[in-house]
Length: 361
Figure 1 (tube, helix red, strand yellow):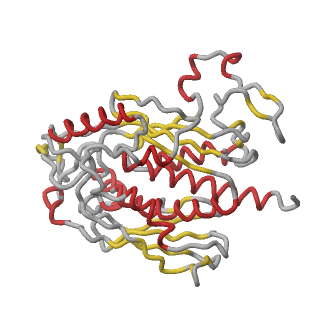
Figure 2: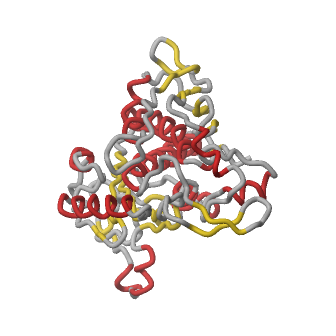
Figure 3: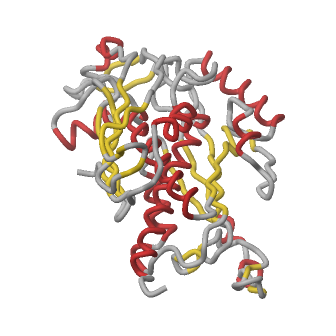
């Protein structure tokens, strides 16, 4: 129930935050793709906790183990199972939350849905679940690298009221990864670090925006009506923990524009038509037009904070809560590889679906 994503390139994640481990099963990856743990580990290292002073200090190596679907370094075309063991789980640190609902967390809603919940770090609602997504996204990245010119790159473009100035034409992976915020604007990044540190000391948290750019996308990916590619991107992004908003291309700013300002006029390209502008964000009618796909994802402030909050227990009695444990004061730096992963999964799925439709090409 709600644990799978995709159509032809399909994933199912499993595991809880403080259980024995977490992971993913990938079904639909084509055979003969060269794949090993190293291909997966780079993105897991970018997602893992404890990587800087502004992330949670949970100490996990997040080493990937491929359990099935790969033989002699190549995919078999059968389901690929990937496991990451939990090494620094401390379920006892959450004992004080056993009967208490954290404000804006999934504690109450999981109880309301299932009549039971894993209170040890949030269980399936924890961002640790995203390990499976990032591992699967790394496999999708390898597939797209081998078969297409697609490049997916994301960065932190805003934290709280600090906005970055980023040249989207030339932004690259190395300059993003050079900053612990994953914001390539060095001046904005320094201000973000300061603001996150202040929030952490105050027992508070911050939200922000991740921008994602997908280069080299061919025209024709996506499908009409319910399987529009931006709809699948939106579903993928809004399925990530702490997300509250998604906009593609001109997004909400388009309401301030006239049609004559917003329309992307066509011009002859080398092989296909190109657009003079990209207010559509690379997608028209739910199908890619060959321009770069660009979108933004809003993340709320981390729900679990250490300052005192008013809430209720599972008997509906009012209580005061000072949450303990290890939590990110701002999820944005670690959210970047998560956004990339979901983008890669959507593009890989639609690329395979397009191959199945255009059988006579």
